[in-house]
Image (tube, rainbow, N blue to C red; front, side, top):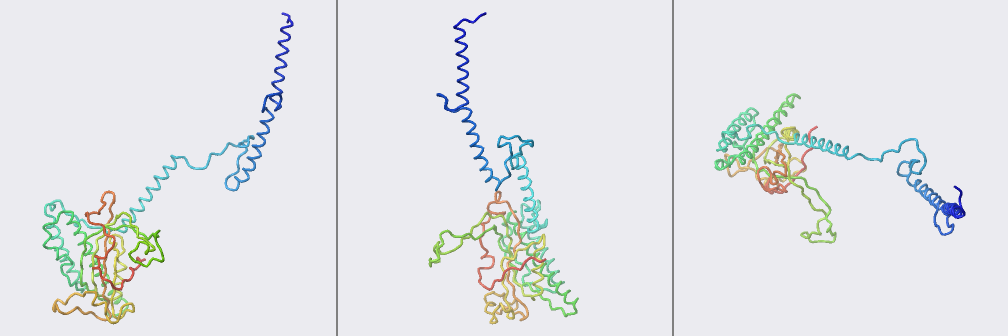
Length: 388
């Protein structure tokens, strides 16, 4: 069908309109159309130049940016971002916690006392647990008496520190009885370690052709109330002022003591010994063995011939030496080549502070051990390092 004049004009108009639209898209600023293809290319070039400069700074600290990030072809796939998936991270977290818990349990096992079965009240004695304690106490006294006689050692306290409890045994419950049974176990172990230390020193002296001079005498054994303890640390005092002269002011102390939750149950036993230096050194080397781990909380040594101890024996009077059994008005004397040792050795057990916030026996947490040594001041030397 032939086109008339109207159709031809309409077709020409559409052609010219298409040409003008293409020119407006390609060339920016053509007529009234802003932007266009050329503008987009210019912006792309500017962005590419800016990204190239940023990439130079990026390479100093990170891997080089791949070509794909610049809009270029890349054969190798884009690497995954660094890091770990949440599932892998959680698995590693659980594994690390399990390993840490295992290390904690191993450390607790090596540092805690291994209490025997008799330190627990049998079921048939739960109604009168004091009877079980008295039975064990009498048995241990007889056993230790035999061992002391065999080692030719003296113990001035045949009740091994528990004679003062004889009138209270009937009022104890199971919890209190087991606490004192553990203290009896620790007192027994300390005496046995003293016996072994003296015997080993005698064997050493005989083996080297010397006349045995090992000596060990147990003068006082006093079990103390168990207490709880935990970690502590010195932290800087933000209010500290070096110009402060008032000791009671918060600004006077440079550091504060910070305490964390208690998780250790201590069973301290105070003991007073007269012994020779070598036998006592053997005793100190024996208290750090697994299963009988004892912590030396305080240690006082007095002797006229040691350089760190006064020759005038001024500390001997402060040591409150026990009276002579045969003459109550006379202080006990000891040989000049011996030392007088007052110490507080504690066995340890551990508890969960979430389950037992006040300890295994609901006792008040103790921040210091003043009561463990009677509050006396004297020459205190640090505890020795663990034996190799």
